[in-house]
Each structure stands twice: as structure tokens, then as C-alpha cells.
Image (cartoon, rainbow, N blue to C red; front, side):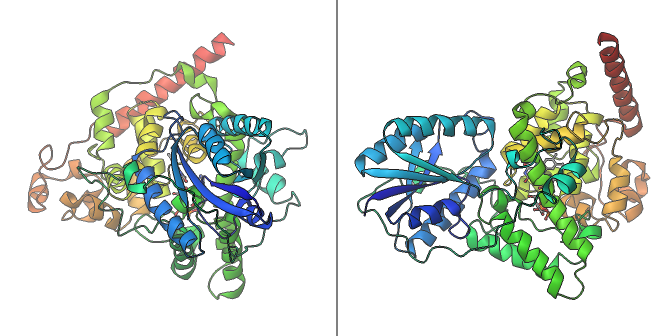
Length: 486
Ligand SMILES: Cc1cc2nc3c(=O)[nH]c(=O)nc-3n(C[C@H](O)[C@H](O)[C@H](O)COP(=O)(O)OP(=O)(O)OC[C@H]3O[C@@H](n4cnc5c(N)ncnc54)[C@H](O)[C@@H]3O)c2cc1C
């Protein structure tokens, strides 16, 4: 019996883990390894909220491996150097991992594969993160898709590719003796002073068990009426599985089949709810498809017209947006939810992103960077594709001229104002008529509700209608300039 390494990356689970299964099936002893890759640049290096999640997820994975008589080895530094070192130290014959699709990571993995190959060490990679790998889905001309509905219906759902069935973790994972690594505490992944993550703890349970519990809870309480109610930030009708998917604590196919089975067996869960949840998972697949085939998605406008856009560099407005102090209650509620919990409801993400890009005319990359640092589900593919979608600069994007009205979005999707009252408590005493537009309330009403505009809650930092006109004019000018240049 020889030794092999199972290199965990963003697949922090024991069940449905094809790399781990293959390592165990090789018949060798398995050294489970996680490397905190210090060589990655800021575009892909985990942000602060992601590091919080990673710390707890690694704790959970360590405990799960210990329960199976094995031990997770932690290393920090350059993966290639560390893999070569460990391979030499433990006479490792092969390394198993699950594939990543981000440009920096595919390039890194390719380099590692050839360097290890030269040393006679086999590398085996598997699919674990997606239902459909980016190269598996092509249009009739053999090209990548650019439009979601075609990608999903024609490409994925008609591909004939089977969605794998869930499989439990290997019963035993024979250990390599004497493998030692770092102490997780020494990596300082958690915030120290100030500890801005106190609000994360009651909400999240990172790790495989937490992911399964979250899925079950969603199926019990949230899946019914998902299609209609998933847009309501005041209700609990979305799964909040995104950070678990990002870190690979649950396989997408496990969630897929569990939701389908609930639809088939539980009264009240309609086919449309199941199909809609599946199609939202499809958007995740589509983001990966786009990022893999168009790797500049993270840094460059997909539509070059937006290179001509007169972006603003107003630092004070950017800070007001980040801190939830724009004077627009729904925007501020979302930004504060993000800061307090590391997550924000999708509808509100769209509104705050649109506000930054269109009302403030600040480049979507500023928003993408802030989300990258503050979201526990920060995901290069989903984040950059979504920001470009809202900006109108992306593939199959919302047109730029469709500008969300942050007041009406609140009235429509938070009709009783519960979401706003939860996150913007200084407005909680206002009635529903004024809650979404406090600047229109008369002085007596504001005073009775304890609101002092400009003192305990800001005046709007821009006027909605003026900002809208300014954005549309800028869009028109950039479009005309582009047409002229072509
Ligand atoms: C500006 C902006 C930035 C975003 N950044 C991220 C990000 O960094 N990471 C991230 O995972 N999602 C991102 N999203 C997409 C979406 O908001 C989240 O995936 C979703 O809110 C997660 O909540 P949930 O798990 O409850 O979703 P559910 O409604 O329960 O959906 C189930 C799963 O489908 C996937 N999904 C749902 N909506 C989308 C979508 N629009 N695009 C891609 N995948 C989707 C997610 O994996 C999600 O967990 C962003 C959206 C916007 C508008």
C-alpha cells in the first residue's frame, strides 16, 4: 500500500467528492491536504468574509476526517512547492483533486500537473463543482453560449449529460502516518479587532453538515412558492445555499435531486418552484461557462462600449454606498445586511448594484471588489457575471437603460417595509407611506418617528430623477461615440 494525496480546494466535503472517492479507490493511504495559496493575486485571493467562512469550514472538515480516522493537513504557501515537498517526504505516488474553472486557477493547475508529471507523480482531476463543465456545453456551431435561456434549455437540459446521483462519503479513509501541517489558528483568518463578524455566527453553519441542514430547512420552509416569493427580501423563500456551494460543502447535484424529490413527493411544492430553483442553479452554471470561455469577464467590460463610459470616481459617494448611508432606505438596508451577515438577498443585490452603477455612475468593478471582500459567498464567476449583468456591459445582460427605481423596488418587494425596518432601525417608526421616501415626509411626521434627516439618517445623496437622466444621457453619448468610431 503506497501513499496518495487528496488535495481539497473548494470541495470541502466528504460525500459526493469524486477526488476523494478516487483516492480511496486507488487502494492507497490518503493524505487529505488543504493549501492556503498565498501566491494568488487579489482578484481571486479570498476576501475577509470568505476567510471567516473558510476558517470554520476547515474546522468542520478536519472534524469530519478525524471521525473517519484521518487527519486534514494544512499548509500555506505555493501549492507547487508544497506538493513537491510533501510528495518527496511521504513517497506520494499520485495526487487527486477536483477541477476549478477560474482563469488563474486553471493556469496554476496546468503548471502543477506538468511539473508533478515530470517527477513521475500522477495527477487525477474530477468534476465536482458543477453539473455541466464549461466545455461540455456548446451551441450548434461548437461555440460557447452567450444567452442564458438558450444555454440552459437547449444546451444543458438537452445535453443528454446525466446529473450524478448523490453518494455517501467513503466509510474509511486509510491515513498516512506522520503527516504534519500548520495550526489553523496560526493562519489568522478570523477578524480580530474589531470583530465585524459577530453577526455571522448565529446565521451560518459552515461545513458539510451545515450545508445539508440548510438544504433541508429550505425544502421544509422555503421551496413552496419559491418562484413567486424568492424576490421578497422580507421573507425566507430562498435557500441561502450560495456560500455552501461556493466552498463545495454540498454537491450541486445533491441539491438538484433533493429539490426534485421534494417536488415529486410533497404536497404544495409545485413543478414551477422546482424548475425555477433548478434554473437559478443554471445561472450559476452559466456564470462558470462565461468565465471559463471569456476569462477577462472579471476585469473587462464584456461589451467594449462601456470602456467609453464616463465613470465617476466620487470617493465620498462610494463610501456612503458601502456604509449603507445613501439616504435610499432599500439600498441602505441591503448594504447593512451585507456588512452584518456577509450575505444579501438577490433582489436587493440587483438594486444596490444598479444604484452604484447608474445613480452614482461608479464603475461596477468598485462594487465587485466590495462584494468580493464582504460576501461569504463571494465567487469570482457569479460575482463578475452578475455585476456585468446589472451594468448592462455583460453577456445576456439587463439593458443599461433599464434603471431600477430604488423607491418602487422597496414598495413592491418589501411591501410592509419589514426588511427595511430590520436593517435601518432609525426609520422603523415611519409609516409605510414615508418609509420608502422619508425625504417627502413632513417635518411633524419625521419628528414623531424620531427621524432627523441629515442627522440620524442621511438626505438622499443624489436625486433619483436627476441621476436617472444623467445616466441615460451618459449611456446615449457612449453609444453614439462607439457607433461613430466603428
Ligand atoms: C451584483 C450581484 C453580485 C452577486 N455576487 C454573487 C457572488 O459573489 N456569489 C454568488 O454565489 N452569487 C452572487 N450573486 C447571485 C445571487 O445573488 C446569489 O447567488 C443568491 O442571492 C444566493 O442566495 P441563495 O443561495 O439563497 O439563492 P437561491 O435563490 O436559493 O438560489 C440557489 C442557488 O442558485 C445560484 N444562483 C441564484 N441566483 C443566481 C444568480 N443570479 N447568478 C448566479 N447564480 C445564482 C446560487 O448558487 C444559489 O445558491 C450576485 C448577484 C448580484 C446581482
